[in-house]
Image 1 (cartoon, rainbow, N blue to C red):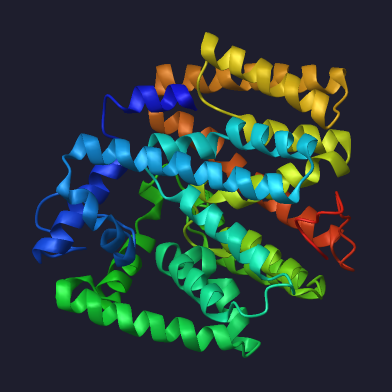
Image 2: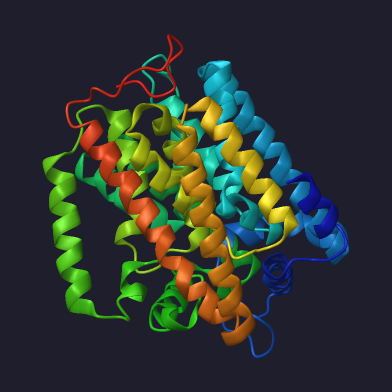
Length: 390
């Protein structure tokens, strides 16, 4: 990922450029979500509020600063992993995260997925019973998550409402307070206008090639989507774990699968859970998850060297049979060559449409396996320093 920073230091990513422009509109009082000119930033207002200090810098410097900030957050994630996992498994998790196309895409495009993953990790750690006086801290983290990625947090927040948790009232207070601040800065930045934008966007998701939601994959067929929602929610209800920590993890994994919007970068939490599961699951199932994890549309020497290194590391750490590792490598090379062929002959969108279903399938498989594995809250502790306690 270091090479990505060197490359990105020379150019501003498209997504961050949109965030930067939208933040300037937010501060100037211009129409935030429905501008007459310029691209629309689809993130909630809190992101632009937090990015406001960066507008004092030029666009390129702000972009570099944001990338560095993402790397700092990655180091914080590493610190958490080192604290709760043994060295060998920490190395496995870091290898999986580094190999993930979603992680690299987040850094390349100046997205906020690393922020979301760190906050989710901290929140899960705080669910441990040893943290007793953390109600306001948990509520603050939950508020930020809900503001930055509402479609990823809505199932869990609804669960908290049904369970009558105190956090919901504090989150609603935070939301009211920040809505007032947004209105004072820019009247067009309130949640009313954001919901108008989401309604419009939900009708245009078919135009976004990064989409991995089932509704998008079935070409907007609502009947199929409703049947699927019923089945997956029924499956979740019947296998819902008893511990609060496992319930949280299950609902974090479920959210992208039931949303009408699911960007490939939103699989980052599932990637972490996958890394924790890999040493414990069937070798062939591991091979399938690794294939779905490492798939990419690039076909060059850098890609081959990267794959060889990542697969070699995974083969040693899981441990994965060499024959299975070579089979995965062959499949990835063939698949990547096919994607590259589609890209060269039919364009970028054709290539994307081939590999976006893999993100959904990866998320679904990790979710199903984790739910079934924890049906009786018997998720094994990897070490005495438990990261996920049943």
